[in-house]
Length: 109
Image (cartoon, rainbow, N blue to C red; front, side, top):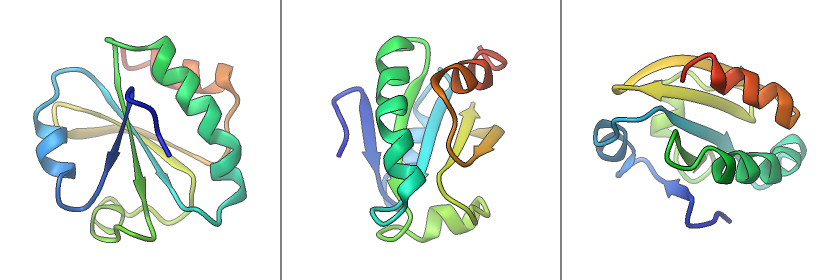
């Protein structure tokens, strides 16, 4: 799951990738069994294409990787978190439409 525009991350590489970016980083915390996660996945892919070069998009499966979600206190999924300069700026919990996601992201560009 994921295109070349979306980085599929894990507990091991998350911090390294996060610290290496100089643009905002949108992370989608998701799981295979989560219905709303499946609904938002194509929206996140469209956002990744639309904002290419402006933000980096990544996904992290919370079932396979529990360290990172726990360290950011991700309880509900899908949770989308925007990071900049390694710090969390904002988060969005639950399904969002493309327009809702755009306005969530645009606040931080």
